[in-house]
Structures are given as structure tokens and as C-alpha cells.
Length: 116
Image 1 (cartoon, rainbow, N blue to C red):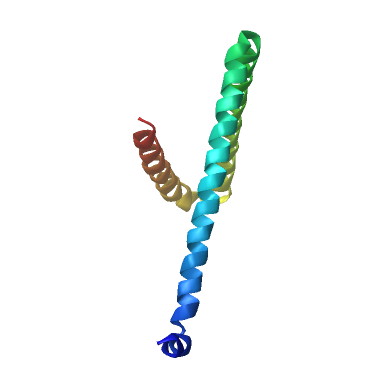
Image 2: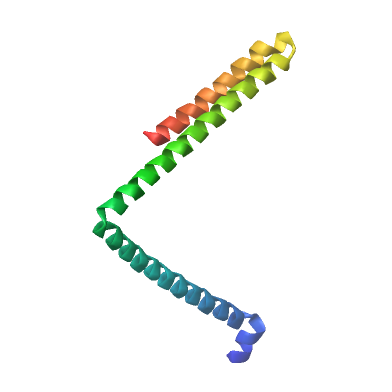
């Protein structure tokens, strides 16, 4: 039986299966350590109202900045699209413009559906 497993390669499969189980245990242990660290950090933050307020303000500032970055990217994309349309021959501008608007409407609609 052992020779048959050796010849068919199933021992290798069993070793790989065992190793992936070991990886799962290591990953689970890491998650437990992370959870403990998070609990410790949360307790320290809860103990200090000033620190909690400072962190809350920093996170709000961070997300506000990210939103402004996205807005700036949208404005740049709009400007680039307008420039691209103006570079096209006059007879194509309307057709391509409508296609671009349609594309943005679909994408924006899908994005809003996900957000809401």
C-alpha cells in the first residue's frame, strides 16, 4: 500500500494537504494575535478621551482628503475628455460625445447603486 501511494504520488498530495492545514493554523493564530492587539489598542484609546478625539479628527481629515482627491481626478478626467473631443473632427465630436456621456451615465449609475 505504501509503495502504491509512493508510485501514484498520493503521498505528495497528503503532504501538501497537511502543509495547507498547517498554513491555516498559522493564519488563524495570526488572526488571534491581531484581535488581541486590536483589543489592547482600543482599550488604550478608550482610556484617553483626548487621544480618541484626535484619532477621530485625523480619520475624518484623511477621508475628506481622499474624497477631494477623487473629486480632483474626476475634474481632470472631465477636462481630458473635453480636450479629446475637441481634437476630433467636427463630424465625430457629437457621436463620440454621446457615447462618452452614455458610458459615464452607466458607470455612475452602477456606482451610486452600490453606494446606496
